[in-house]
Length: 245
Image (cartoon, rainbow, N blue to C red; front, side, top):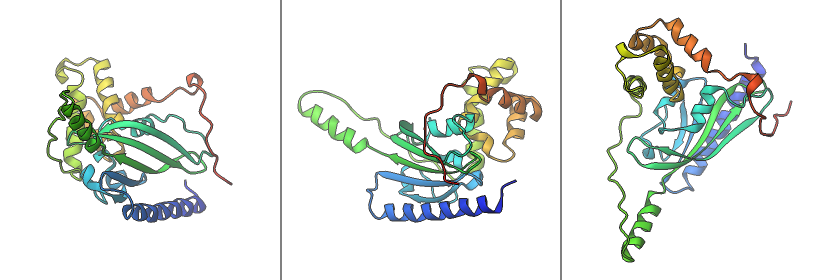
């Protein structure tokens, strides 16, 4: 159980970061999104956001409403690099994709308490498509053709039920098989995909996945247990700043 001191420290850090997001909103351009997640409330984790139009999110959006291919979320769900006393971990300079299809350059900072439990994530997503369009224009002037794809319309990122259904359907589709024809290994891979998208942070998602795959909720938990890293086989952990006692 979390101590009162740890709870106070978490809340203080989150409130401080809210102010930082608000300050950045007044300085950064509209093509850079800054978002703060409170990981204790995954169903509506976004507690502060600047330029949420890039991903269609706003305060109260769920954690699963973020960009596709989010490496930081995948590492968070897999439990990688969890070290007691670690103040934060950084996943930097990776490519994600908004629901519109636009590519984003992303960096995420996951904050942890003294026990190593992640409680907040501070994320930056930059849309550099305008720079790519300029590059396309320059190439066109010298005779090279490179056209940017027309982005699709933004979806409603706050629709939790719709997002949950979309992730489940995508996980099943990724196996290339109908549920009736799926082997145990296929179902594990489908669950792995869903886990990587952060689905199991959402309450009641285990029951929905179990029903969709035709297994029990305990079977889903067994699949998830199989995906947890084995401490004896993990590589060395990068040195990071430690939290002060």
